[in-house]
Image (cartoon, rainbow, N blue to C red):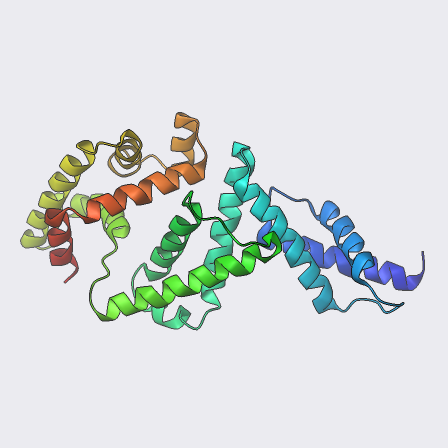
Length: 263
């Protein structure tokens, strides 16, 4: 092998390792990606010129995009779980690079809320995805940016209340107040919220929605453990939870108490 080819192999390996770490952990190994990059480059190359670093990165991204799309759509539960974790990490990192990042950072839990809203769209069974799986990463990024923009607009109009975040903080705040700390009025509101949430959750007609909220919020079981208990994919737990939270948003008593707490 010539020195030139050895240099190309080394550069491809560096690109592949970074791409796997960024997009396809637990789904595609670096060695396999190296081989696919080489095949793709041979297919598109013209003449004897070697590819630039940017060209190799774009090839790797397109391959990883197709791989992640297939993993997102597969029936294999373990692969779907791996795809979910990669997608969530990709969205979190992508959001930091948007022009909305600085504004979102000024609002408590805003970045997490935007990622959650984007995942809800992605995990919806009616969401087809892009026509070209190689554009999957870009397609997700576009949805993320739209959600970030919409979130900030709703914040300006005072209509965005993070039900997910408030429920997660509820138990911690109740413990603080039971220890004698905090505002007595807030303690009353927290108790009212806890009772209203418990009643609303236990009365849900959909058994999946009811179970996921009981386990994750009232019993404190995390998503991964609950998925194992129910023998479903983690992304199913995620989807049920956010659909359940949407249902709770229609409960006027709960939303009234939440707005009183965040004002």
